[in-house]
Length: 386
Ligand SMILES: Cc1cc2nc3c(=O)[nH]c(=O)nc-3n(C[C@H](O)[C@H](O)[C@H](O)COP(=O)(O)OP(=O)(O)OC[C@H]3O[C@@H](n4cnc5c(N)ncnc54)[C@H](O)[C@@H]3O)c2cc1C
Image 1 (cartoon, helix red, strand yellow):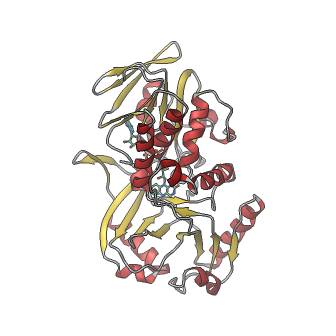
Image 2 (cartoon, rainbow, N blue to C red; image 1 turned 135 degrees about the vertical axis):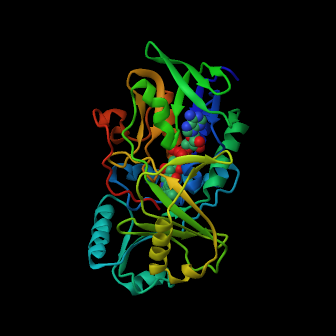
Image 3 (cartoon, protein in one colour; image 1 turned 180 degrees about the vertical axis):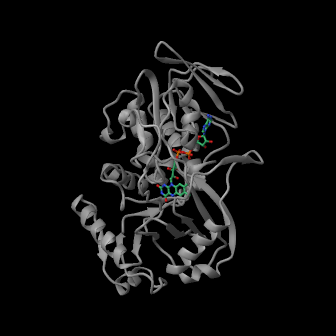
């Protein structure tokens, strides 16, 4: 296919979800991906599907996403590993107690059904294996998690079934803009002339925006991830903590998948043809210590894998989902700041609304491209992945 109606750059959850929605809407769609499905953030992720702890601007989207997740296996005719087993955000100190209590009050007022579990006994009713270092928690029963690689693959497979072309192992290297439109897209293999372009290229987005003078002010901190071999099942919900310096869940296989908080900006390299972000021994030690501090049995699990993940953090930790001013046929969906997986089922349809000039199903004011005008550096606040 040489002239797709719409070219999607990136096969993470964002690009995959957009591709399916567009194929369903009868568009000819091509997805170009430098590595493979879920090769970057959408594979590195903890894959929590969370409404709790969201910025108010993202809450409507997160709630809509949960409705979609509940029927996603049926829609995609595949197993995404989605389970609605809840999210506990833990307090470990008196100060965190107040943070969590206030969070529950604010989010309940915003319409999310949540509870404040004000002592260890109440928290242990949900997860008996938690340690005495936990003093309270928020509980959102409608949160959950999914298998990220299965999910992205399921989206792409269904998009392909509906006619989308998937071009894996190909890199988009340049967008050529003539008179305010992208007229050509240059890859390492060929030149295309799509009608419209969606950039869903995660932490690499600025490589294509920089030459157009349109770069987003992103920080790219590293998050350390550890995955263990299957262990006895002790953890149902996803665990977070008040200051976001760890998160944890136990997959249905019994494997723990745990993460650090956002650490310093990292370096993205390649190994064996795959993207690679290295973590430090200090970060690995800190992650193990913090997880075992609240879930002691984690320390006995056998480690199967350790990797670094990189976040695309904007100054307000909210994504950019918008048409690009000055380039008529370009839409951007990036800067998800550590929480773009859970909302993926909505991001794709919203991006499709934008690109097809349909009425928007979600108010996108908070996600405008031009809100950072004149800002060179990101001074991002706390980001709550997990
Ligand atoms: C460790 C970690 C934990 C996280 N935990 C959670 C969580 O619990 N819940 C949650 O909701 N979110 C979480 N997130 C965030 C979430 O994973 C991301 O926001 C989401 O996966 C972003 O998806 P994406 O499709 O926008 O980007 P990506 O998945 O990064 O996809 C972008 C793709 O574009 C490709 N690409 C880039 N440039 C080009 C190019 N020029 N040509 C071709 N292809 C290109 C890349 O190879 C990549 O595959 C976490 C992230 C990390 C790293």
